[in-house]
Length: 170
Image 1: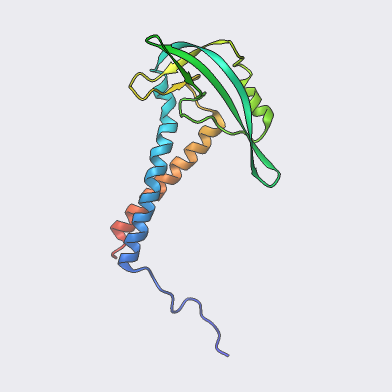
Image 2: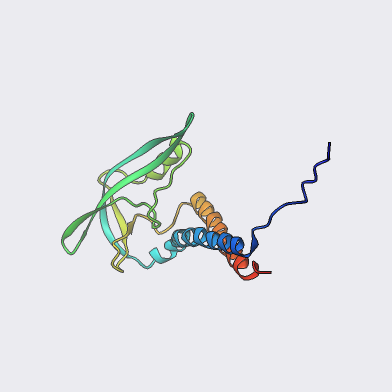
């Protein structure tokens, strides 16, 4: 019986395969960076948004069954505000357009405890025309860390893809 030598006979991708893998890394990295960039830098942009007066219409915590015996809890706040005499409804707490999920109900409840129904609040409105609103100019701290991690992963994927395209022929 011949001993197996796993190092011999292995195949490489070759120049074409390396280019394809490089392009795939770039195609995966670009959307990740694009989405997370807006989430990371959205809060700094929101500080320049117009401040309107609004009213809390409803609050609740929605529960989602994520996997066996695991649940996530999302704080939901709906508010009304008026622009040029027209009433609008909003539901974004954070400027990144995401109401983040929490692993426990009390964490999600803590987010909405300051938003009681009927309470007058500041609504931050993006005057650039996309109609985005938020109740705060800051993102959730724990979620911001996770967003930053994905942003870095996206940058690394793009760099790996570029390196594969540039040095893949050698």
